[in-house]
Image (cartoon, rainbow, N blue to C red; front, side):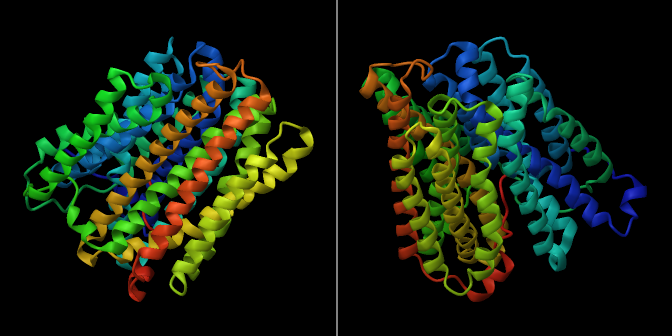
Length: 490
């Protein structure tokens, strides 16, 4: 695949490696801004399109589903054909689909553009870490990954507050348009700075059957989870519920036998890696499930303005980001204890919020303290879990393991949003008989339904804690190489 050469004025610079790192961080930043900003906009989109909750949730789910489905496909394509052109295409297409999302005349069209946006995000995510690590070299890899993690944390933290400003002042269309300038900047800088691919896969075979099985398998799974309340035990739901395990089983069977699989399943022979993978899935499910549930609690239950709701939601990623570096540094000493404590704190905070969210202004300060505790708990869990999981992978498969964790993170976010949407809709219908929208629900009933979601997130936390108990201890030297700076989704 043709790849443009970097401009010599940059390639000859003594700071060239850091220019590449900075360019990659733009993609990481806009991916996290987009992921967190859309959650806050869901109530506004419900109003704008007069659409039911289960339909609006697909503005978030469509992106995550598309990202997760094609990430392994694009990662393999990049190994075979080269990374730079695919990476530039990711930036350019992300900007294009973001602009068209803001112009969408209807909810189905918006969801369609979000699916395409998710696919372009996967082009970035499949290549960002490898480009960054290759440019930085072994001596500076940890520092470069740390900078990338910081860009992710900043994007995740800014998203809700920025979304609140845009929703309050300009309307929902601007939450998509705001990332367009960054995508254009990333495309230009990527063309001028990112180096050409120098290492290609020795085996050029592509696992087409695996790719064909993966996409419908994930789609059927998320449909079965998110639409359970809306569809009931109808033929479409039964079809999805039956198809999901069959397709996933077929995908696993194929990957175990494929000469060049999209996903290397041999990593799961390690109990530590398998347990850590489940931990990644549930922790990101908790994070995005909390964003989803609290967006409706604050906007519908407390009638917060978008800016106020966005600032309150920012508490979670800020607390997570402040704690994660310290928990990552401590993770080599007592990882199990740290992870258990983290999940215990998050689960307890979620359960406390079920009592604190009563809709009165006086309860907001206590609720914000609960959100901060939830973020602290996740900060205590995520970095040590990343550390131990990457340490459980053989050194020669660290790149494959990092890519798989990226897939699990975005899949976990999708499962969290899908399950939260289903539980919120079920709780509202059980209490009020309101089947479609949250806008007409009494505040007390809506907050009670949000409480049901929080109980679900606490159960996720219990599962994450159980994974910390059954895993083996990480290797002492593995954590130093792949610790808190482990690759994050772009």
